[in-house]
Image (cartoon, rainbow, N blue to C red; front, top):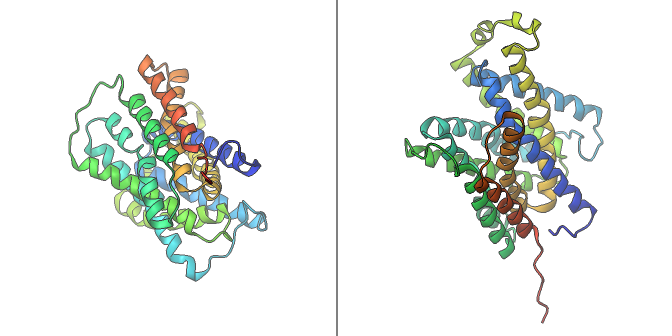
Length: 318
């Protein structure tokens, strides 16, 4: 894909950027939500409404090319089972264990941002997707920018449990496999249909764990009277969950799925490198976090690498 391409390609790139901006706020929202809500309760609060919301939208806009909801055919069930198991279910579990195993959240965040490095390999092997030299060079440059952005100025570089490194790459692999499933699922399913069925499968995996680890007693332990005050911790936490539900779990996933089907797994996942860049900007603008010169250089590398990755190579006809 080239930025000089047709209107559909521009729309796909715009969809990718918007989805990454939305997801760049997710980590901040999750942090505030987890200050009050137990982890699996937060996940249930997030995905039950998102599945119901997509069901309503899909039924109302049944014939829409993006937001319609198609009936699931039995022959396609394995693809949705793999997709839903990989993400959000497996990715969220592995991400949690990664942060728990590694001493440094900075190291964990850096390792969890490496999906663009694995995407070309998975796409080439599982989809026979063509990976160009510009794709590889751009991804490497952009990933170096991510490392600069997350590691420069960090106060803790200790690893902790080295199993955390393996868990991080397992999480990233799960996310990339989910991207592969987006590409492999027949085009007759709209983006909303894919996200709806995948999240429904994930929810079926999450619910037994929630009942086992937390259950209804977690709901009873919350001080619901705090909702009378919109500035209370519980009100803020539920507001963050609402953001995660509507924007991160529905809108961003639908936009990403739509764009990935247009530009391919390698180029779509390359945009994941701009997520930590936007997160750093939000922390700088709204939370007063210091951004040294090295982090700004990292951002420049991320953007430059992204342009290189998307640059179409000339075909030699001689």
